[in-house]
Image (cartoon, rainbow, N blue to C red; front, top):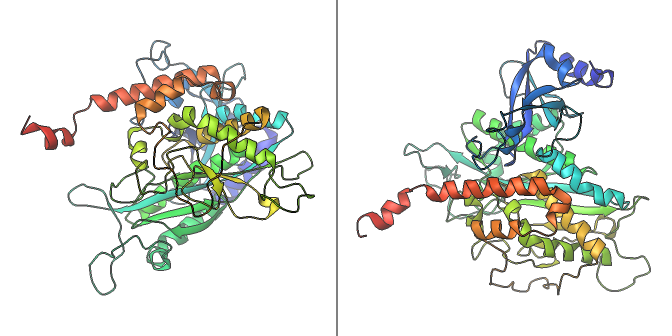
Length: 460
């Protein structure tokens, strides 16, 4: 066993003396954690030479299928690559009855080179231009989700709070309702305890803009890959804890037409080599905007990259149902201070915490790829000194016209023409991502849904 990892393994075995299994977790292109269970005796391989897994595991669709348009997982013979444990991610699985561990893995070629289709590796590559420039991103994620209840008609519905003394559902979204949090107190208590067990830095929980919709925030960390590890592990934790409480947690972008969608918001600040905020205003500035020209250029780069990044921010058919009038979901590359209808919000903060909140992606998106696209736009903007256009003032109305591609095919067309992302995500990964997403789009639109029958069968 790798000596550097022995304390981590020993700590887990001390916590779970009867542990027999470890769940190996690998994020795929959709951010779905796939993998396998290995025996306790195989931990030395995971922390040493690696455990084999088909490379195509990272390139499956949401149903777990490979793509005929790609050789990966088909004509290439579905070869294995090696999975190695991510340091610090080995933890107990508190929701399982049998003592079980879990660990995130990163994929490598047999040669030791990073595997190009591993989303963690894609993000690592995207960070390099910033770190090469002496800049260190400090990031956090916010995830929105629904808690659903069982329905005898097999139709998902929110686990809506009941009016006390009755079975009547509470009307209205009841944003920031402490009663809604208290009604699910046992669930949130177990989420909190499980986060502590798994060393996930979850903080604020809030009742959101729809019945049984909630948001849990994660603390800022100075490692974007680690922040995304936290995000995918938190999603897994929430889903599994919800099942223990008779509910189902969903991170679908828009599970209900009449209720708010679920977003993945990314907060980013930048530090220089001395640990000073790059986005903070110069000390000599006595008046003016509370941020630097670098923040403005970063926003400009995000705006330039946003069209071609939409296929990453909204990766499936349901993703595009969020982009509708009257929702806190931007449809143009807008920006400003303290305004939640914009794509890029500069939150109220002191100078040391000056940051950008990127508000476009859905909670269904892959956090690693979203983070990679966001950091790509930021570096592009700072390097090219991009200008973002005029700010929208706090309290002002936002443009009603959609200038971003808010239909799946249009976003894939924009991605295929990308000029910025291939440099950061890798040309081969962009090629493969585009093929996979378009293939799934074609599969979706080839299905005949109930809506076809309801609208057309009788009269056409």
